Length: 117
Image 1: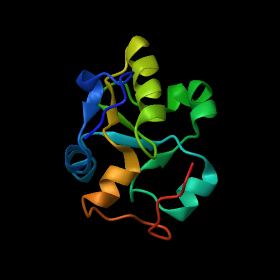
Image 2 (image 1 turned 45 degrees about the vertical axis):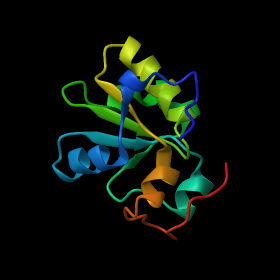
Image 3 (image 1 turned 60 degrees about the horizontal axis):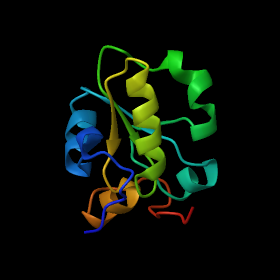
């Protein structure tokens, strides 16, 4: 499995772990993709804040529990996690994004598809 050299593995959680945290109410999962990507398929229970709107919506995210950012493959969410961690959030990126989530057989809501970026 190839890894993006810009991604820091210390800020990544697996799709399975993200699902456990979400299902238990122990973390917030934030989809940072575009609206058309979310419409095609998304993680049920996740919040949607497009990447370019994240900074202005930061105050809507909790500081008292982990925030797991998610995109299609993991690059955009890693950028978001690094920025939010620098601002004092317990921020993480979901490894491999929605593509990895889907490939592991985890449920995709909406149309059940992983849209191309």
